[in-house]
Image (cartoon, rainbow, N blue to C red; front, side, top):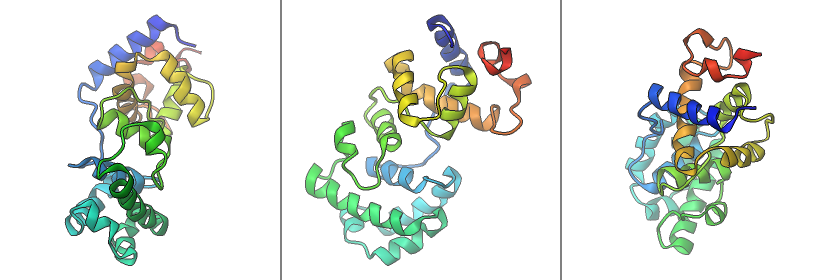
Length: 209
């Protein structure tokens, strides 16, 4: 496993490689990121980014989404897969945000998890990107890279989140996870990782076994 000094160096190297660790999902409002993340489950961010402009143009407010015809929402989000449950969750979560949270996406893990279709990954993304709170977003890239690098030795998302929370400086954690996504897409791919191009190869457990 990496030492505290190694982890700080790892963070520094990734910051240099990826200075702008923005979320790949496009949004303008807090709830738009929430629903874009819901649509991204088992779907690519690129595809979601083609669907959400249509969805939010036709339904530009939470009130409109809460009162939408589910068949129409299903038709719009169909390209994202699992469209029936995703449409249902979007409508139900819109109603709950309006009725329970005063029209504002909640800013605590506990309240976010009350929303239909919201798990810890989505909740952490909202906490980090919208509310700038310490957050650890454990997606497929995070699971793969954190194991390869040697930060964790488990595929369990909740265990990974808790272990990374212990290792990462809180103020760095959210951006660190975004950088893992960027690095996972560009270099540390699932198949045939480009270790010869990797900026953190010197610290990677897999590269130094």
